[in-house]
Length: 460
Image 1 (tube, rainbow, N blue to C red):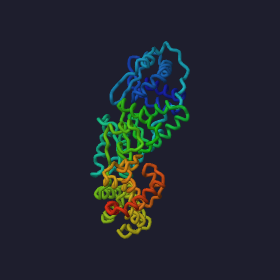
Image 2 (cartoon, one colour):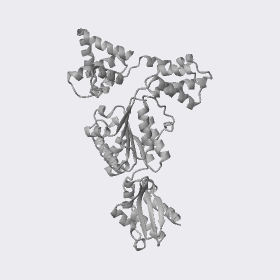
Image 3 (tube, one colour):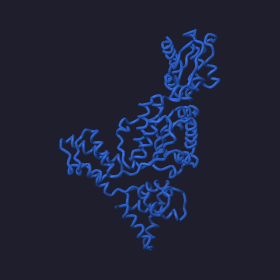
Image 4 (spheres, rainbow, N blue to C red):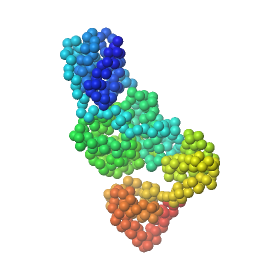
């Protein structure tokens, strides 16, 4: 009987508040307990409990009083992995009022811009990116273990988990895998995954519509917040300010945060010191460049998933030749398998070289600006972040000029593109650096040998 009453009340509530508000606030309510004229309704988080008790408690009580005059109390509690926690005093008192003495209220309108459902608010998860499909090797085993711990445990000692590494090394794969695992094994936890870029755009929209409160409610009502490519908000002060306060609010409530970036928190240029400190306060795990063994393992796993027979010598060849990142490696295997299936020929080493001639040619001589910056910074014993910093001391400026010079010599990037990789500098700065290093090489034999050594190390 009580279940049927609750079903009818939910239909009424949905009609009154609309689909968006119902999905966000009322659909997660569970009928937790009903006995002796008292009903206890449960919500998965404290924030949701407080919001529903304050904004919808009176209306739920009025509707249920009309359905069942014998009901004398309604309580809204947190009913999740931590057990039961009653609503705050004011909201609880309102919710527990005697139903039979109340005149039904007019429907309460939904809050402006009520938060959308988490699935609609965040980005779509790639079904391929699961822990089962993640190949573990020495370069990524620490990050993988940390991701597993966050996914499996209701609470961990480190918050946030900060994953960083170069392009195509598995950061996004691990982020998706965490979200998939939590949604599958603990669906009551609200998981929100999105890019830092999307976070910024939603914040800008909230500012324009003068509705930042709804924005805050959207992001602070989740149990697990996952933000990919956080380096995107570097230099964007207003977005960093809001992200900082969102970060603090979630951590204070014991909610988990998982963040990824292309660099460690200490090397993120354009980040406020207080935010960088927060990002460093949990567990920082890096994903290193892949080894030959890991690349071979990835190829074998991918071929098995696709149900394709690929000769071992072909996979060994690809693992040796394509070392830049996992995405490019998997893309090469996809091309080889697709060619074989479309033309009806078996995969051989010769056909692989023919199909991938453009990719292999580029891989033979491709050197990235990031690699150049890292090698030069190590050689001159300065921080990698100095390559993009505003510092102009000779100790920093000279290595930066060397890196610009080598980027011009060893990559096909234009001067403006190179400048952007060095903290958004103008192309004329790159031109000056190239000219300066050429002059020094012609006048200083020792310096010239230093630069030549760096060139050979990068090309080797």
